[in-house]
Image (tube, rainbow, N blue to C red):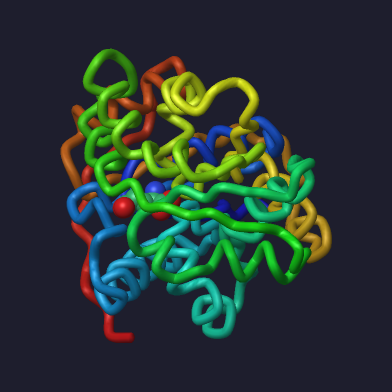
Length: 270
Ligand code: DGL
């Protein structure tokens, strides 16, 4: 099937998932939409998160995508089930894959979760972890300053260390965790700083690899894999400033994106 895989995030964070999709599924075309104008979603009320996510989904459905990856934990927490019920294409979120990867990694069964206020408030990770193993102790905390910092392009240096240190203080003080889930797709962009702050004994988990694996399995299951080897170009769209998006994508993909465009998205009724 030649149709593209649609990928959404509130901003640039989902690019960490997109790059893993490209690595694991080199024959697939991606259409990515980052709602940078309205980012961050994580501190917004539930209704707004749902509305903004549906607006993005509508834009991509008009492009005739064959599968949707919600490359945003906040949007996954509040819209995954609704989208799975209402869309007639497969929809994959990032929370279950992240939970699976964490269970796989932990030895002492104490798992830390960091994410946006919305993701932590939803308890979605705790539920996903306990559905697999009720014996897991979950220690969670929100880090509301990380996403705005990443969207500004600050991924290292003194400001990044100070913000991450402060954001993870209670996690460091109270928890004897051996695994920490980066429960926001923006966080892998500052993973070196996070690793330094929590120490090498804590294994960091980002859901991108497991999400790409699940995408691959679902495409195969539904006979949706692209078997054609015609040339295609991935498409990237943002609702915000191109320059910041371009800078960050250069950092993630080590080259400029050929097809990057600034767009407006309409409000749809849900
Ligand atoms: N990247 C998104 C996530 O994974 C959230 C960023 C935001 O707050 O908008 O949760």
